[in-house]
Structure formats: C-alpha cells, structure tokens
Length: 92
Image 1 (cartoon, rainbow, N blue to C red):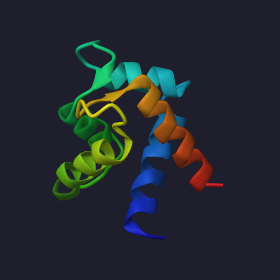
Image 2: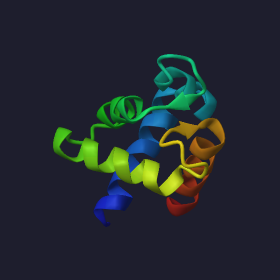
Image 3: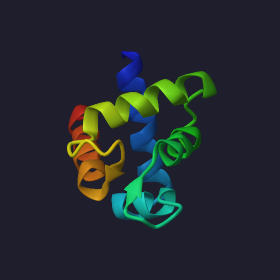
Image 4: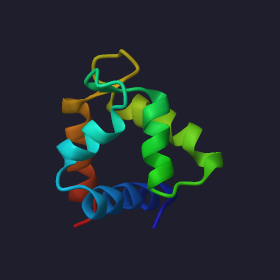
C-alpha cells in the first residue's frame, strides 16, 4: 500500500467510524461554519485521522492541490464529497 493509499484509508476509517455521514464530518471540521475547509481545518482532520505531524502540512497542501476545483485554495462541500467518493472507490 502506497503512502497515499494509507493516508486515504486512514481518512476513510475516521469518517466511517466517528461520523454518521460525510456531511457530518465536513460540518465538524468546518470550524468557522463558512462551508469551506481551510488548510488548518484539513490539518485538524488529518490529525484526527492519526496522520503524523510531519506529513500533515504536505498532505493538506496536496489534498487542496488535488481537489480544489475552483482555485480558491479551500475545499468546499462538493470538492470534499468528490474526494470522499474517490477514497471510497479506491478502498473497494
């Protein structure tokens, strides 16, 4: 399993085990309630998913780079949902 797969797997486990739905997870990590996840909020998600501190900054940047479709350097609900759906597909 690659590092990317391991990280995505940990995110999937976090969301599946601690939240009733991806929407609930998104709302939990969207601390300011603006409908978008900032890099800092993504780092909190990664911390909860037990991603090491060393990797959190790199991974949060890569997640934004990979899933931020509108270029605002934030992850909105649709982008988050797309990422979760992709994670779910990869784990099958």
